[in-house]
Amino acid sequence: DAGVTQSPTHLIKTRGQQVTLRCSPKSGHDTVSWYQQALGQGPQFIFQYYEEEERQRGNFPDRFSGHQFPNYSSELNVNALLLGDSALYLCASTPTGVYTGELFFGEGSRLTVL
Amino acid sequence: DAKTTQPPSMDCAEGRAANLPCNHSTISGNEYVYWYRQIHSQGPQYIIHGLKNNETNEMASLIITEDRKSSTLILPHATLRDTAVYYCIVRVGAGTNFGNEKLTFGTGTRLTIIP
Image (cartoon, rainbow over all chains, first blue to last red; front, side, top):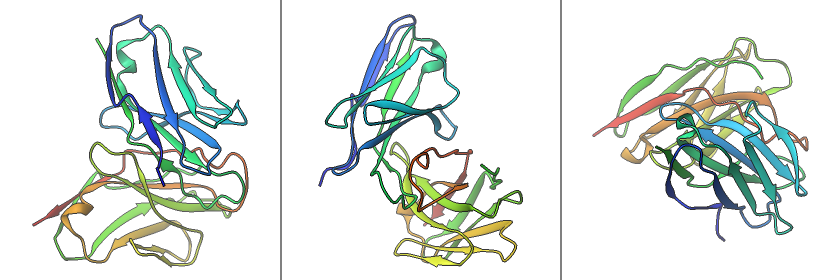
C-alpha cells in the first residue's frame, strides 16, 4: 500500500516563475492538505482540499492556489515566485469520516527559488 | 488552538528513556494533545495523541498532567533512529469530521540520541 507520494522531490526556479507540485494521497484517503516548511521552522498550513474544493485556507497569498482531481490527487501552484517561497512543501492526506488525529505526510518537494 | 512551549533541544543516551516535555497552559477542555516527529529530510510522522488519560502505543507513551496544562512524551528505549524534531500540538481533535486536518506546528524539540 503506497503512502503519500509527491513529485518532484527537488526543483529549482527563478524569481517570477511559476511552479506546480503534485501529490497522490494514501490509498483510501480523499482529503489532501498542503504545508510549507521553511528552513528551521515547523510546517505551516497552506490549504486543504476535499471533493475537489478548497475547504480551509491558512494565511497565504492568492499566489498560492491548488486543485484536486476526481481521483483525489492534488496540485499546488505558486505564481510569481519570490525568494521567500524557497521551502519544503509537504502534502498530507486523511480519510473522511471519523478522524483519528493522524495525518499521513509525504516526503515533500524541496523548492529553491534563485 | 492553544499555544505550546517546548525546549528547543535535548540529548538522550542510546537505550535510555527520552522524556520530552510540553507546556500547554491555555488548553481548552475539548482540545487534544498530539505528538508528531520529523526525521531529517522526511515528512512529519504521527506518534500519539491523548485527551486527559495517559496513552501508550508501540512507539511511545504520553503522560498528561491532571490539570492538562503540560504533558510528556516518553520514548522508553531510545535508539539512534529516534533522532528527530518532535512537535507537540494542541487542537480540537479526534472523532469529529471536517476541519481537523489543519495542524499548527511550532518549532519543536530537536532530540539527539547519543551513542
